[in-house]
Image (cartoon, rainbow, N blue to C red; front, top):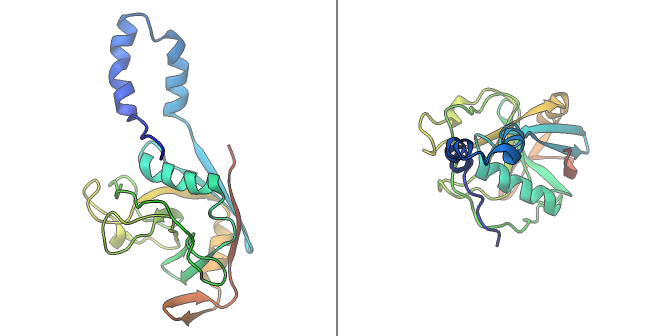
Length: 201
């Protein structure tokens, strides 16, 4: 089990005191780099590559959860098992034979009015239980504001990044023929496979 990372707000609150004591010098460059660090993930799929820019400043727990699965190779060989044109494409949790992948413990819901379910954003899938997201995610192919929240961490679906390259691949996936495969609905007739997921820098 990994220990939780102290919130960045704690470090920021210490900056004035460190400056006053002359102790910030060696840390100042680190603080600036950390505050603007960008997390990029490439999903290589059977339909092409999708590159995502994640938002650790606005959704730190959600990004950390997603990155953990990426680093473990947990998304490699999974599929987009639920595809609804005009809504979203969902994946990350099943193999091409629709066997469920193992997961870590669910994470708390982390929504923000600043992160909306708009076309091209990536968000965590969950059950009806608020704090139930694990490994499954979805990419919005339309503006789905009914999935948003107006209050931090109050229902809604947690957006944590957006597509920066490969939206044409997402659009290709959203249009594939689908069928029902009990207990699943809207399953691509031909599996759309995530061959690998990797951090790009």
